[in-house]
Image (cartoon, rainbow, N blue to C red; front, side):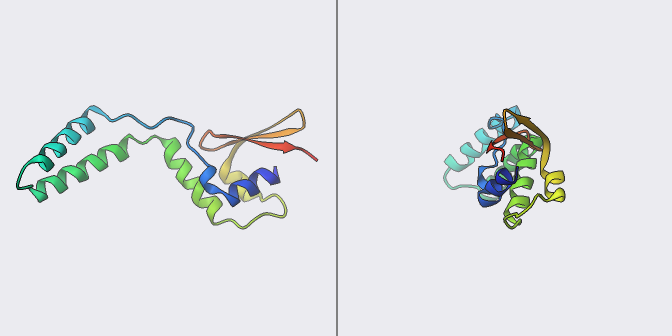
Length: 122
């Protein structure tokens, strides 16, 4: 268990959202087409392009599910945590949803749904 947490501390980038990249919503597709049209015109209406780009970014951000937000939160938590010499109850509470021991191995489900397996238990 300690080994799993220290691996995540050493490499917070290994924490990944278990879901696929969200697809664009219908509104995002419309905004993407509008932005492409605005950028394809000469001269470019910079204000309209900027407003459309910001609206597109907001639409895509709204489409991100809770797993992606939780993944980012977990990365921040592990990034600011020093390597552990013993288990940290607060870290476990804030980052782990479930721990399973199976055939002398720890299997951890993080709060974003990702499953991380550890080596043999000692």
